[in-house]
Amino acid sequence: MSGGVSRSGPLPGGTVDVAVVGGGVVGAAVARELAGREPAGRGTDGRPLSVALVEARPDVGDGTSKANTAILHTGFDATPGTLESRLVRRGYELLGGYAERAGIPVERTGALLVAWTGEELAALDGLADKAVRNGCRECEVVGADEVYRQAPALGPGALGGLTVPGESIICPWTTTLAFATEALARGAAVLLNTRVDGVRQDGGGDGDGETVLLTNRGPLRARWVVNAAGLGSDAVDRLFGHERYTVTPRRGELLVFDKMARPLANRIVLPVPGSRGKGVLISPTIYGNVMLGPTAKDLRDRADTSTSEEGFAFLVDKGLTLMPALMREEVTASYAGLRAATEHGDYQVHLDAARRYLVLGGIRSTGLTASMALAEHAAGLLAEAGLLTSVRGDLPEPPRMPNIGEAFPRPYMCDDLIAGDPAYGTVVCFCERVTAGEIRDALASPLPPADLDGLRRRTRAMMGRCQGFFCGAEIAGRLARVEGS
Image (cartoon, rainbow, N blue to C red; front, top):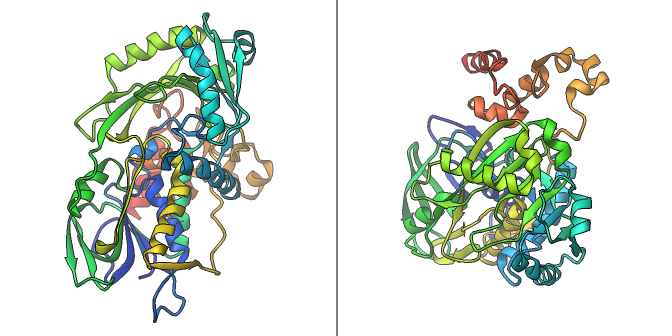
């Protein structure tokens, strides 16, 4: 089966070697990794492993992956000895290197974990020890004077802190898109608007059988299935006969402040972690803004990404304590994301060789950082199960992704680029300085946006102060003209 993007119509015929269910950052990373391998067994003649990335939504990265805190974690505060701890640390190195090659914007800002109470202050030495056990030896416990030297805009009352020099900020949208784009270039099929509703097993054991994924667009046959379905991963797991964990959607609401606030937060400011996660942080973003959040509220509705009056009140209260000056700046946006919390304290990675099935579940907020390591781990498990062998020798270079990070040259700033193509000098979205050339390129890319939200994530258009009030109609028209052509 040759690669391609399918949004509607019949699915490709034949049988794929692997169907990866879930087109978020983890699923896209897995599809990329597996599409770069050769299948095991006689008669394969060195052909690439055939892979289909199956996503229920109209775009990759359109679920949990699009709404997170966008931090490249060192893993300093993970539970030592867990799979999560190991994969976050490995993923930090893999993604950091890949981002440089693929042009994914990363800023090495560093972080400062701040203690506000005596109990939190007493916990710093333990956190520093945990960081060492997780391989982060550069962290240092500091006093209040050093805390305020590094973050002078913090509110009064900080007692001390822990420096985490390696923590960084990254673009989560470009990361997922880069993985999926490279998977496509390696021959994978990207099947969008394709929801898995059921599973049927065909054939016998000893690796000769097939799984038929029953989707809203018809059946898809696969020798193996990898479940990276995020918030729906437990439901897919049950389709394969397992009751191993339950996903509880945990909503996190965030406030995004105008770029004028950026001088107040030149590094990530973290709270001392609690039982429900990392707590409320203040972080610069790769797009030049400042972010406050997230909240943490467990829900039943796996699609409820609404924001709430209660959540905003909580964040404002926290912000007034953490950084009062920030609360005098303008809020330009708010959003909420859902994390796949489970009753377990670690990732849920299980291989069912008899059913030729692998689940990557319970991947929480560290999934962005761990994505490439999870893909590497999945490939290792599938190799042990006899599905795949070595890395292909004919792999294309990683795609060079368009930069949408504020700390790096953007097209409107590049005279040589504009001289070659004036469209890069024609600004359409003035708040974010997005040009006609960037919008054109996004609409003509290997994985083009299906809607305005997808175009936002590829270009930053309509994400500034006016939230598309000025440029929205023009950009929507450009999208409509492409869809109608």
